[in-house]
Image (cartoon, rainbow, N blue to C red; front, side, top):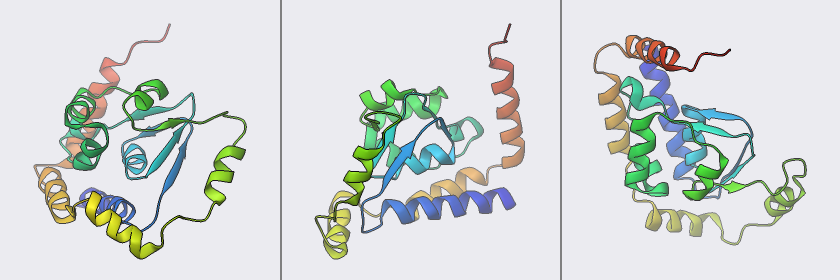
Length: 174
């Protein structure tokens, strides 16, 4: 039950950002898996370092979380491939899909700081109206899908089984 409550809290957080009447920007260096990848997906702009690794493993243990949002960003076919395939995406794959942009120079964030320092073009009310037009409100449907998927048997056992399968299929280091 605690795990289901955590997933519900994550979904609430993701929905709050996705529907917020302001722009959200994320910077990612390194690994963004699971909720970290979902957090990137709810941001308006995602800047990715060269060493980024993005993965959406939830489907591997029967969890439907963030699916509609990811599909609206990269398209249904690509989202299906990423979610059901379980592979990790690197910077070039994410950029090619429209999921993010390359950090101009991974050691110099001046460009990003300058961009983020600019005042917003639109006020919050206008941003709220813009969001309503571009992002139909599926909060309840998305939450229902999450709860239904998380409630099918023991989510903890499914995560443990997924982890065991992932470790078994990992290439051995020499």
